[in-house]
Length: 118
Image 1 (spheres, helix red, strand yellow):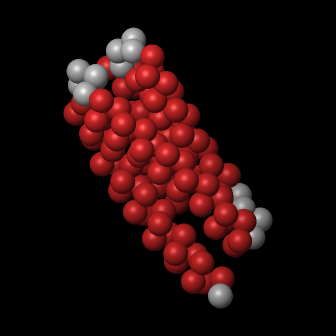
Image 2 (image 1 turned 90 degrees about the vertical axis):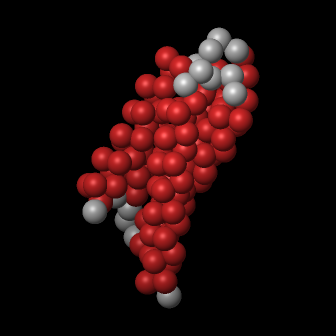
């Protein structure tokens, strides 16, 4: 499961990067896109850090960072889509669906991990 989830996060980050060809030169969209790339790649990188957590609390904390970055990515994707300035919104909508699935997975994972600490 850990390896599969890592592959999924990396794939999600790569897809986020690859959507650059659909971004117009508009300043606001480029800003949102840059933020989206940073947060989507950060979620994959932070998951890698979580795998080497020293304690269960550290693991939960690092997963919380992954979740925070995914939520930031979700909001950036929503804003990019809602502007309507990108010609190929289908790619962003597909990334948004994947992001929302990842958010659900990490929300459940954190909840389960927290229940085992108590």
